[in-house]
Image (cartoon, rainbow, N blue to C red; front, side, top):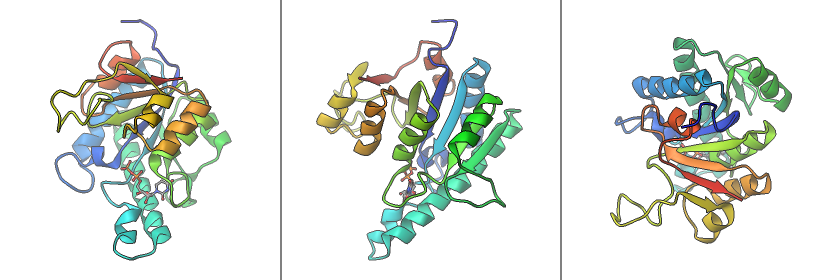
Length: 239
Ligand code: UDP
């Protein structure tokens, strides 16, 4: 394994579901602490880490829309859920002695700072972990798209997408035991094969900005830093 990390600045996307552990809803603080520990390991390697967290463990806009409600309001609720998760992760990082700040796409100054690209860059340069809350700030988007957008805005060298499994497979490995993991694949192939790793808009945005995506398991303690050191199991999505 390499002594210097593969990437200097990365954007880590963590789904809301990853935070709920086995609870089925909400936030398992022990899981948030574990993910914070993984981020600390990466910071200790000298990597600048920014994070986008989803909200699916609390609320998704489609839940309202699917029952005849207003999608926009539902998406606002989903974006608020990402703020709750971001505050939880910041708390876990601070407990571990990692300086972290939450920048929200939707202004709520009593709770956290508002997002601007300049503020994000300044905090990254100060050595802080920057957590981007509120998704893109717009309905009809996902936090995957927010991750791709923020990765481009901060000039990230890679977008790390933490998932339930350790990479992209030819089929769902939980349903089809013969499914094979790709070691690497192109953005174009991910879109053409309809591989459900991130939404198409997010993959297209990373492709346009030549940002590699590293798909890995968020559940493996130490997995994030191991990949940054050149080991571990993942799928690399490149041009
Ligand atoms: N959301 C949104 N705009 C965004 C990002 C998120 O409206 O830019 C809403 C949307 O309702 C979504 C919810 O927030 O369902 C939670 O985000 P997401 O589903 O991406 O979370 P994850 O699946 O990663 O936990």
